[in-house]
Length: 131
Image (tube, rainbow, N blue to C red; front, side, top):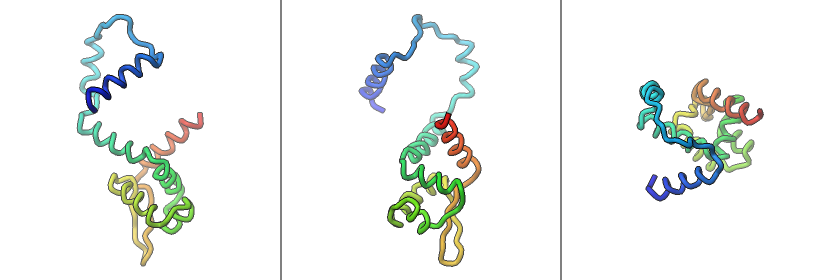
C-alpha cells in the first residue's frame, strides 16, 4: 500500500462518521497485553491472500456447492452455468490456496473442500450474513 492510498483510507475513515477518541492517550497495558497476540506480518499476508481469493463471487459459489458435497468439474460447470475451462481455472486458484482438494476415480476428478476449517469459515460467514 502506498502513501497516497493510506492517506485516502484515513480520509475515508475520518469522513465516514466513525467514532474516534477525542484525546490521544495510549493505554500501554492494553498495547503490551495484545502485542504478543497480534498476527505476524507474514501470517497477515497469507491470510490476506486467502481472503483475496475468496473475494470473487464465482469462487464463493463454487465453495458453496462444494460445502454440500464433492463434485466433478462437469457437474460444477453445469451448476454454475460456466464452461468447464472457467471452472477449472477457478478450482486451480482455490487448490493453490489449499481451499479445495481432489481425488481421482478412473477418468473423473472429484473436488471437495480441503477440510472442516474451510467449511466452518464458509458456514460462519453465511450464517453471519443471514442474521
